[in-house]
Length: 97
Length: 172
Image 1 (cartoon, rainbow over the protein chains, first blue to last red):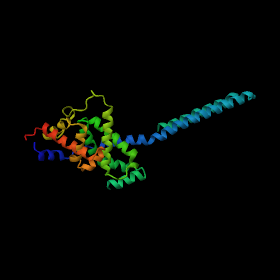
Image 2: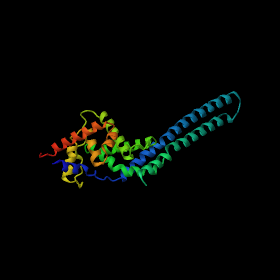
Image 3: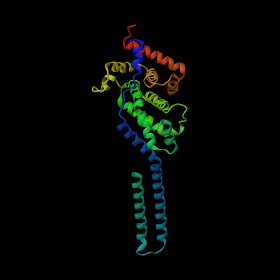
């Protein structure tokens, strides 16, 4: 093979590759990458909210423990716990999306 | 719409659609370059190409237009390849054209021989020859893409050509 033949062979364009699958995979990667800060923020929000609600429940339970609320003594902490679970579920669902 | 307009849109408004169009325009050549560097390993080349475009998307705000967008992409692709090559264990084998080139591919025998010969070159020689010939970059652009001095690029091209001639059977 002489220089001219080699140059000609080397100068041939690289074979065309189909963009379809590659582009779809790339767009998925970019979407995941873009969603990362929001996902991290959601997890932090969920953690902070859970801590706040648990602290409120504990504070409420200790306050109620000092007074006589009769039948309501369990209802209010139970309601707060239910609310905490509900809110956590909502936040976790949005994180998954 | 040309590259610069698409880049402007991708930078200005983080327009994914504009970047997607840029990726579609350049994916074939970036994948082709990486396929040569990985010695015909399609999976490894495509993984590296994905990483290249993702890195380009992350850093597109840093693209100042001093070179063409494609040269900037080749630079990322080549540095990604080198980073991965450094991590690879010494005994880990890359692809082999004989094994990975699909049999149904309409490649001429000369091209198959050329790709097999490319597999015997060092990565800088392979990259330099591919950029300067198949991708049509000037020596200066190729040197910038490989982040090496112009003189070093020229010696890679020269040595690579000599090796290819010897492998492909130079009668002279």
